[in-house]
Length: 288
Image 1 (cartoon, rainbow, N blue to C red):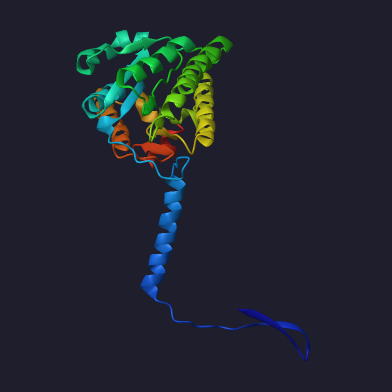
Image 2 (cartoon, rainbow, N blue to C red):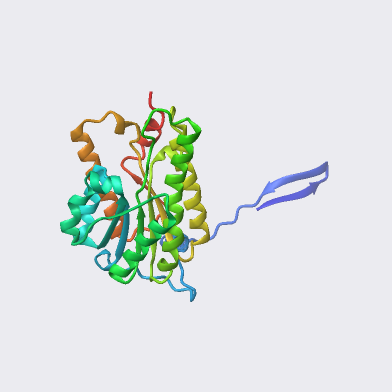
């Protein structure tokens, strides 16, 4: 304690009084650990209306609706999810015909195609997935579309990117969240890129569209934090995607798929997943 007493010479002079008390070191450490463990649990908790913590079913009994793209990482993720969950896959028509239809036999049904600009088409996907398994426990949003041409800074191109990327996310979550509320431990995962967090040069339309998607999902996460667990997944090696060899692309795709699958299987409810080395994140965000 610091005490201040007046002296004969005039002003108050601070003096230090040291009080020693016996402290049981291990007991004190356990109390501190317990405090932080309880705080972390409260932070992760997604409570029901009665205040209990929902227990998530094993992935093998959970219905997963995956909005996929025809990219190696999503092919690898589908291969992992087919035997490990009740999987329903939907994609844009060009992606289905481009290669995603190879999984039709393993899925025991066709990959459902939809129009990303049509709310009715996206709503039909959600309804079909719910009818297939009687529920929707998890929605994985993997639709991530860039410009097909180099004129991504034009008004028409930027508007198209915004309508596609943000539109399909808004439509899907708007119709899926009421169904997710009927599940014990619902989950939404947005698989995106760091382009929506750290703008990349010469790609303003795509970066703006992804930023809009991230902002929308974060806002929904804030509103639904007691009902639905919503996470964002970011691959960290952004710059390397443009220059890697085919072998490196396959290897990275498998790491990507295993990370996403592992987080789903282990019931991870962290708000952000970094897929790959987080140390590479900043170096990869500003390519030469």
